[in-house]
Length: 144
Image 1 (cartoon, rainbow, N blue to C red):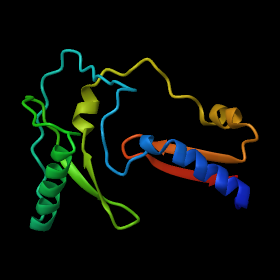
Image 2 (cartoon, one colour; image 1 turned 120 degrees about the vertical axis):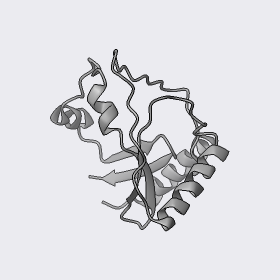
Image 3 (cartoon, rainbow, N blue to C red; image 1 turned 90 degrees about the vertical axis):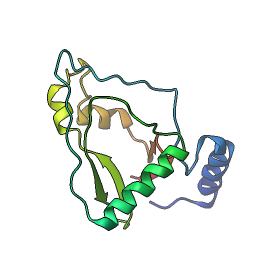
Image 4 (tube, helix red, strand yellow; image 1 turned 180 degrees about the vertical axis):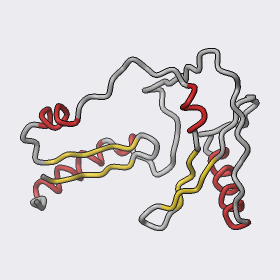
């Protein structure tokens, strides 16, 4: 489905009115807080994975960028997890952490994830569905 001229204008006005909310630069939010409950598990310290010199340069650059944006800070924790660079379909590389060992000792939350069919039923007959990525304000729209 394609948007008509009026619909495009309405979306443009909506995005413009909320422009301060959207940013290409990652930041911090106070809308959510998350704590990881590891119970009485012993600390987990996984050594970094071996990477090529090119990957090491990319990692160091990404760390410096995130430090400058204040989305990370130096850690003094006795816990450590390795990071991985994941290639994206658009050619970019995503900086990710491998929390497999941490996840193995994490006490699960009692909050269950809603069933997909129930979520789809809640959407009803919506013509457009949008998602908002909190870390960079990435807006993706899908027309039904």
